[in-house]
Image 1 (cartoon, protein in one colour):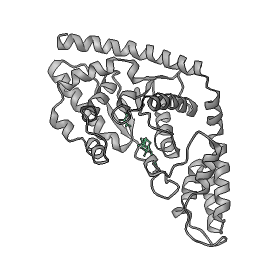
Image 2 (tube, helix red, strand yellow; image 1 turned 60 degrees about the horizontal axis):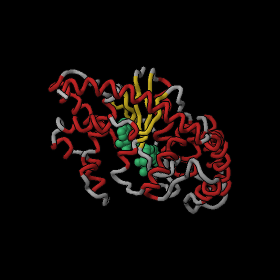
Image 3 (cartoon, protein in one colour; image 1 turned 90 degrees about the horizontal axis):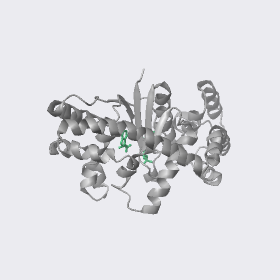
Image 4 (cartoon, helix red, strand yellow; image 1 turned 120 degrees about the horizontal axis):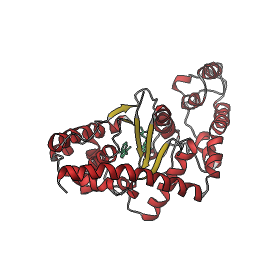
Length: 319
Ligand code: ADP
Ligand code: TRP
């Protein structure tokens, strides 16, 4: 189905169950169907919100490890740090010169970030142009993203059309593939799981922290053996993600028959550890040398492609 899939992730803190089911796992599915794929950590984008060198360094490395641990395979995907391929910023500059101010002024994500108190730097404003460069450099035709990023991929198409019209057909127009069917994973308080709400269950890290999060899931005040409603219970809604459909049906029946919440949490913790243990073990086994090797091979492969695109772009614009 897909030809060339490109996905990217901002390194921004410890990954949680919502990120896994909402983004990592569906992206992994796309990568598996793709003929070619690239996955990179957008550390330059992260600078729009994170000015803490030690935290950025740690967080981008954590992010590569997390992705390798969940199954991104360097034999299948080109994996690298955005900042190590300088063509991203070079192309961004050239795209800046064809991007109308009005296009960026309509960006919803910029407005939301500024409303949240993130300083309105020029970098934050032109974030979508860097994202366009990320995508257009590699002629990606399929970009799987969450709903919040759809507008950015549409802007990428607009910028590509503008460039192609002005200088010559060079860029492939990418298709955003929106992960519509992906469930919103509830957090431990029943709202959407998000690091900004402090209601996450981490994927990696200490088992103690996972246990604490699961045991802290908020429930209603039904008595121990009262029938429970699995549809409104966050414990069940999280647990069912870890089970095949038939298993989820059986578990739902237990809730209706009065499974106490304490027991339900213990079952969830066991299922959680069973499900993620292989990934957790793989993550611990990733040596520094291996991670560096993956990144170096990724950088080399990405640079080769990015270099070829930039050579054509420079030629077209007269540089
Ligand atoms: P957070 O809300 O914790 O800041 P991000 O915005 O960094 O998470 O999310 C990264 C990706 O993970 C996005 O593509 C988003 O769609 C997905 N994601 C995050 N939280 C959830 C959730 N609770 N349910 C489904 N997907 C999620
Ligand atoms: N803006 C995206 C996000 O916050 C990350 C990103 C940057 C990206 N460049 C990209 C995603 C290119 C897909 C393709 O999630």
